[in-house]
Length: 325
Ligand code: PEP
Ligand code: MG
Image (cartoon, rainbow, N blue to C red; front, side):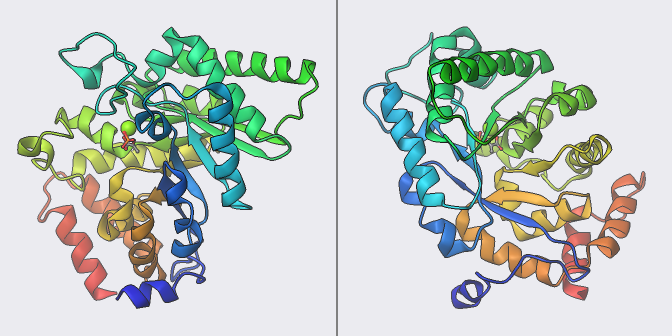
């Protein structure tokens, strides 16, 4: 089977009914980069920049960050890369950057919250990304956004960094896109404002699932208690896909579920056209979608998601659909 997936590397991910799906991979270190061509991914949909910080014994300096981002972009070549700004805190521990002990780290001082409280850290990272992308494309996204105003604040900081660089004669990126990760349920009631504010949205389903079902993603006793393909979560994801269409704002999903063929199938059925996953999942997910009729699935799946008296779990319905096709 491994060989079979390898043979799909250069096959375009187009569904049986002609829909081009963007299959991207997640990465975080330079050692991940060769996987880009090995997996046949369309690009890097999530680059976890905190990894450089987590493996370093001291805080990476501005020029070290810049050199690192430059190497990533150089190795990615023509393939697009979406950098996520630092997602420290919660389950991501950086030894030399300790806040206070927290009773609920997942709900604590982390990610964009930390960045907004330590704007120097954020500015350094933004500047390193801007400089590394001189003359090219820069796509970045913010983790754990809770209110749209947080994105507006970062956009303003970014604008000032751009202004600063251009004042000192630095070459700027040719294009600059700012996105938000959708991981906190409060954003579900700000979808239209959010999508008007950003260039794209990326669903962090690991955290969105954790927060919407109130189950600690790292606690084995509850992590698998509720099905990620159950009706409540699929309704949430479908609302996001619909908002994306309504607002003409590209949406992608980069949590672990995107790399599970059955879950990826569900995502296509509810309207997603771009997903990012572990590189080893690209082959299996591509194999799934090549034989998939998305419109037919959408009809069945949507009806089942809305059914107030469901006869079978969605997971089962998906498996049956996959078998039939
Ligand atoms: C997620 O939360 O789904 C996500 C992609 O981010 P991370 O797993 O790094 O928290
Ligand atoms: Mg997350």
